[in-house]
Image (tube, rainbow, N blue to C red; front, side, top):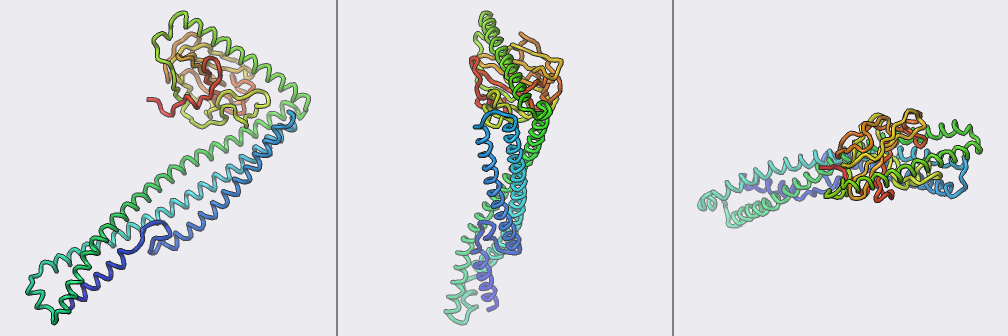
Length: 413
């Protein structure tokens, strides 16, 4: 009779534990449930805050669009800058909220993983006991089993218990397997959240730099114009003239070099260049191709991308080709750049260089260091069109500017 009671106890425990659900934070049972519920509530509050910040950011974007439609003036440009700075501030705050949300999610996943590991351990112990009991009962001799019971009814109940145990054994084994699969998914989610956290942390650092650069640009603009609308118009006229001169120089030199290379059959039999390597280690783009937020948009369209690069960062050739122009400078007002002509009608331009280590007509291979980045206002080679250290990177197809992101590949093998 004691064996029957023991057997029934095992059955009840197993049926109670093996029917526990396994999926989602809120469904986990045990000591961590309250903590997980608190975390889920905090996550919901954070997401609501993020939603509000996104709405505020969109309001500033609309204000900027309205200002862009107005006449070009110093006061209008300052208003655009003020709205853009406010937008960046909110974006920084929103990114910080997202980081805190990810921290809470990772903490919740950690608790969930801990809970599931505990459940699996407990179930493994019960499974082992079930297997031991079933093995013991199934290996009894028939006459021994019959003699142990006072009536056929007791014997029937014993057989029924054993059969129930065997059925639950199969169900519980499947449940443990599903629990382990869910556990692996939770671990994968944790790794993904941690990766997202690192990416957001990098974005936060970059956005803080964006804010500093735009604030410096505003201060420099006020200094150059002395808050005078007349001086602002004079500044715009000078900038347009310098931009046109550089653009004409790049266009004419490329045409001349391509004619010379064609006469010498330099690219004869060479596979057309269709993909480009990133010219710097950084992948953070501060201004995009024809970017609406480009600070000099009212003077000219931004026919390149700007890549964040600390002053003095090595700049590499995006593909093999011939140096068409290596313009060195000795003053801050001079714009230093390198242009490389590639096969297949492609050419690349690298602007705001602080140092240049190549010369015209030189052949360079993809990945060769051609110079070092600059762009810090007031430094040699930065030129007039800069708000902070970065690389100005252009791609041209048959002389016409195209979006560099359509050609750049993240990793070149």
